[in-house]
Length: 113
Length: 113
Image 1 (cartoon, chains in turn green, yellow):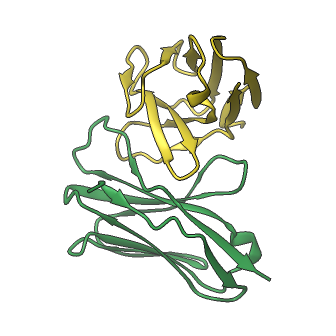
Image 2 (spheres, rainbow over the protein chains, first blue to last red):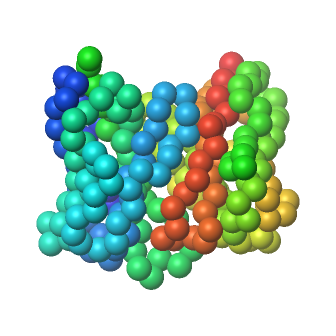
């Protein structure tokens, strides 16, 4: 089993829909959880950063962590065509030291106008 | 403030040729990373440098070498390019290792024929 699993999609939704993107993980030591957005032919950019369990909201984006289920989600409300991108989850443990982040493979999202 | 700058943006090599990919960051970050991204494979870590003067292998180091020239610059060298090294290469940096978010460049698209 890979450390981080993420459905690659593609996921296609109509403009205005609520989008749910998810990752599961196996390492119970993971405490820091991130979501990156990657537009075509660009590098990934940090979208959301959360620590431990709970929710974090930033505009139309909500990141949710359920450590008991080892499951994280990114919700996008009122999705826009400009949200069309690949979304990657990433995570690390509290005592990870210099160990790099572990990434999911990314989910490709298309929002259709 | 340029962030992470990668050169060149595009490169075509013949099998057996060598080249060096350059990366520089202007955020005074301690840690720097090289990833490759292939369809269906996600981001795979090649090498990283937790701090100036140190380098460590990632998931897929074979066929590559790195140099942490100074705190700002981290280069990736292909000594004898192979078609399997056709990929998009991303450099990233972070304030510290582990839990710190990564800042990515916009990639070098390399084709080996």
